[in-house]
Length: 88
Image 1: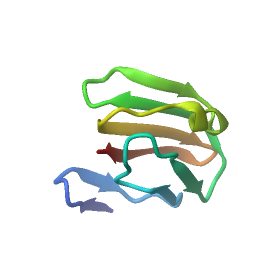
Image 2: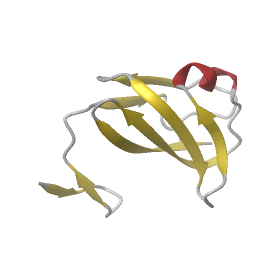
Image 3: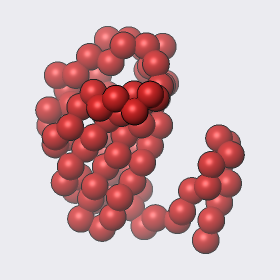
């Protein structure tokens, strides 16, 4: 099943559910990730493709995100998820 989301990009159905909050978030805020499966690895990319974080979820609390758009790639035990984060 393929659904077209608000961004116009195709999203594939995944049995794994993830929530980023707050999203969008203010510069300097902490990000909380709630996932229905354990996150094995987490990579955060800026919109230009630069990696700003790579590791596990626990180290993310120390990352300060400047204003911009980011993509979070999360590898779980049941598959790969990609979510968008906006920092204002």
